[in-house]
Length: 311
Image 1: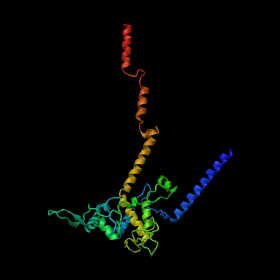
Image 2: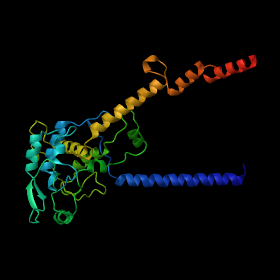
Image 3: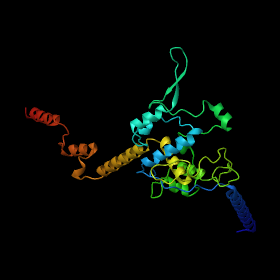
Image 4: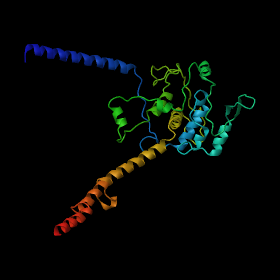
């Protein structure tokens, strides 16, 4: 190795080391100002066999109705959805009574005028504001709709943890980052002198002041009336609102996987319990049993040739 080559290698190593140090310093500075990662929660609806906790969904709806619905809409959910399987499963009578408490704008009538009527189970939840301008004028900003928020919000745990979250292994296949983030956000108001400071919101300044505190909602089932409990319950309800067919989807996925695995097992074995072999195998077996002539016409032709020669 020549002196020139050694010099080039040394220069390359120096540049690489300097780049690594620069990246490390930038990453350290970024981490110092970055928001912390939300704590991973334990959800009944997580994993391939997940399901919603009915009591938790009903409590979460209570939190939404008494607190969150003052600002946030739920446009994609109808009252009747609250009685459907896989959700809070209120009774039809409860849903009908709940819908009747809301005023729904309808029309026009015979005179061409719009009018208000009591809600029906088929109606969707009416928004708290007539339009976006009214919401902006009242709150200074437009509050996001709750229908899909639990699926729209997320965070990255970085490499290699995001790979573990994506793999179908124990502790993996985790898709509940949205509810985790909402729980952390509701618990992240850490400065009493600044109601808009939040540990988990990017930049730490959020337009929504602390919306709820201990004792704000009166549970009747003995569940603790604390902010952490409210946060978990309303986050679970928001997850259901974003994916009301989650239980059905997971059951269907499990059945499909079971069918595919059993079909694969049957296709790779020749045990009688698995049924007949494939059409290709049956065709090969028929060809093996067929006469060498290959057709019932050949024996006739052969006999004709023998007869002709004999004549």
